[in-house]
Length: 544
Image 1 (cartoon, rainbow, N blue to C red):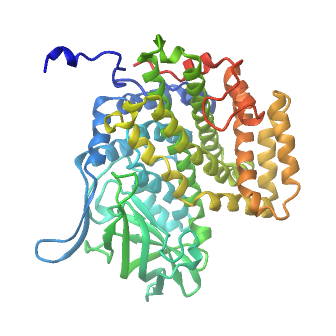
Image 2 (cartoon, rainbow, N blue to C red):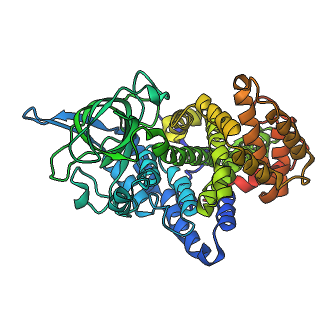
Image 3 (cartoon, rainbow, N blue to C red):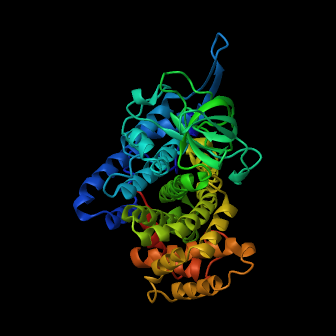
């Protein structure tokens, strides 16, 4: 075949060798907004270093290899001894090592710790999403362990360490550890009070033996796990180490690894407990209350992780359209493609702005901000994670057939996109949690309304949406059947309020016109043509 037939033209160059953090204007502005001036220079440089790593060819290759070579389970050694180990590709360990060394498990004790950690998690997740699972659970385990000061004193320095050490050894011998979580059982799913795993007390106070199973246990090579089991006093939270202090392996039988839609680099497993040693965390019968702060933190990470997927998907779509020509011009200059890209960019920016606002509330740690988080986290988790899959799918379509092939990276984003909507409670669980807060915690709704009300008077469409929301909130009778509609509206009003206050006028105008004013269709690319869409798209563009 003649070589002239292989001349390559009209293809976008690879998007590689760029700073993922600095190129993201919405994220950079959020960090500047929520970090104290005396800390800002150091935080920005820290995130820029991570951003350059995330955009490097090396990190992109790690992500590809970790997913093309998924983990494998070895239940026994060559002699027939049970070992229950999961082997990962070296790229998985490199990704985890960079995450830990960059402080992505260290938020609770640093100034502006949650904002800088959320921004870093959003940046580094764009390199590869699967390894974020143990990173997230390790970060989130801290508030649960703090219910037991002795346990927190022992484990928190290990959890927040910037040292990653792979392999199963006693935790005291490692410079840093990772944590997992086991709540879900096959008969109960999200209804954890239906769990059947039992916990029998031992002679020593606080020590138990567990018997039962967990249907989903992610990252089973972690050093410790927070699990729920039925103690004599009711459902209780326990810490289960993989390796005991004397160096022996705890009873932790991995039955199989899940064959998942996406998240291929991460090992999700089914495990059996049979004579498994555990230490009680918190009081007997208060397991849900003990672990709820961990759940809330991982729910926020679902929001951040979805924002990261959306940002990477939009970045790739805008980059492709900036170079690809069709029908006599560059795609990004075509009015219809510009409308699609602007619509996607709005969704991405709204998700990023909301995620960083929630992280800032964690840093503030006031009664008002804790009340705000009680409603805002499940509402954001419901809506932002729901938007991730359609954004990834539409962004893939912007690349056409090029986006449908694995080499583009877009299929991996699309397969990863539904995960965060399912993890830590699917949509109905989040909606019902919002209803519980509305019915039982008046401080939460007051804090939420105060937050969105800060922007009243700035945009008539936002004002109208707030008025409609108040009407819906005034009637909670029979509300369960319309809970999704209500929670969606709450999330959109919150996003609109944040963008009106902090985003450029063209972004806020387009968001309020479409998401709150109703001037929008059922698919992306249906924004009002009179808006300044070119500026919205340009704001999302990356210069590699």
